[in-house]
Length: 113
Length: 114
Image (cartoon, rainbow over all chains, first blue to last red):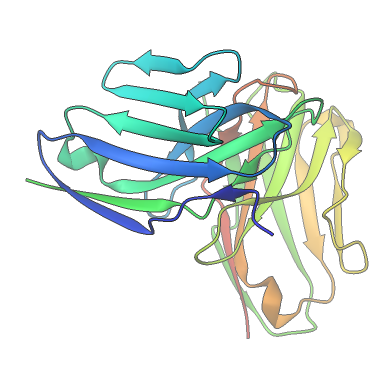
């Protein structure tokens, strides 16, 4: 049973517009959430994270929103750029799990010029 | 600062053969992780080391997989004997410590078992 779900396998967005990637989770013990970006033939690269005590974290063009009651988080990229085209993974860790990240299946984002 | 290094980048073997992967973490990082990423899935943690001790190997198929981190730096992951379902990308990651420290990933080793 998947504890972290990314229900959209792919997303296509026009350059300059907003990209919204969604992630749902089932484990109420998760208290730390991360987004990783992955280009082909490379390892995942950390993008942004959020603790469960917050509902928003912003870093430049990237903002992560957390809705604990809905067990849902989203990553907003504004404005989207062609270089943002990659696979985005949502990941979560549980209280006391000491770094054991549970990943979703990923969403492939394509930003068209 | 050099990133996480892994070798080889690609490996093709036949089922029942053995294979080993090597990882050199970022200098000074005490925690090292091995993940398995099957095509179309997210990475799944296999084993976690803190220095040269195993912290979590609950998802490591111990009948065929083994890993070690001698001297608390480099690590080796071995599969013996390999099965078709072991075809995946094996990712190594490291972090300064455990908990919420950012994990930095290497480029991975793509294993194909025929």
